[in-house]
View 1 (cartoon, protein in one colour):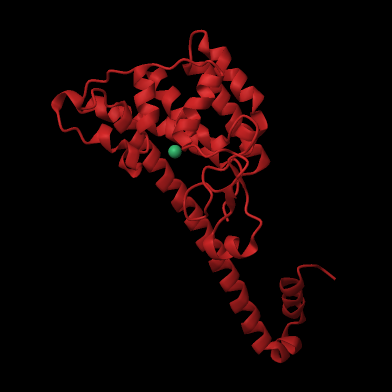
View 2: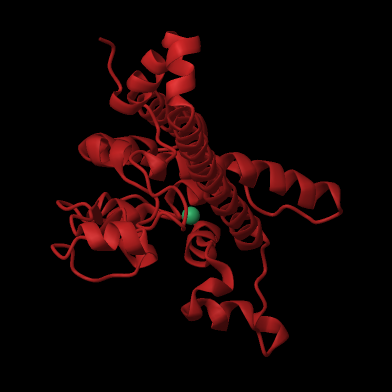
Length: 259
Ligand SMILES: [Fe+2]
C-alpha cells in the first residue's frame, strides 16, 4: 500500500511550516507556530483518515492532505476569479482555513485522534488501518479544530470561521442550515467555503485513487509472481535440464534469499 517515506514526511512538515511563515501574518503567526512546535511529532505522523478506502490513512497522511488542499484552494480560487466571481477574501484567510480545516484530526492537547488498529480482523476485513483513540473526549473534528485554535489564543476572521466550519460541505449534516438558505439574507455571502470544499473533496478523491492504484499495482505484481512460480514449477524438470539458473531464480523468488 502507498506509504510516505521518513524523508517525505519530514519534507512535507517543513513545507507546511514554510507555508505558515509565508501566509500567516500579525501577532498570531508566533502562536500558530507554537502550536505546531508543541505537537510537532503528532502533526508529522498523523494520518488523514482511519480506513484504507477513505483517504491518506497512512503515517504522515494528514500533512500530505493539508498541503494538497492548500495548493488546490489557491488554484480553485483563481478559477472562480477568472470566471467573474468577486474574490472577497484574502489569500491568508484561504490558506489559514485550508491549513486548519482538519486540525481536529491531530487529536486533543495530549492524545492522538487516530491510533493504529490492533485488531487484525478489522484491519484485514474492514480496511481499518487506524481507529479512534478513546482517550480523546468526543468532539467533531471541526469543533476540536476551533478548540485547539482558541487554546493557543489564535484569533480568526469571520470568513476563516465560515471557511473552516463549512469545508465538509453538505457531507456534514450540521452544515445544512448554512448551505440551504430559505431567506436571501441567510445566503452565504462569501465563496470561501465553496473554494475550500471543492479543494478538500478533490484532494481526498485524488488521495483515495493514489491508494487504490498502489494496491492494484501490488496485487498485479503478486499475481504475476505467483503465475511465474506456477509456470516454472510446472516445467521444473524440463527447466532443470535446460537452464539450471531459472531453478535458482525460482528458489530466490520463493524464499527471498540467495544461497
Ligand atoms: Fe480535509
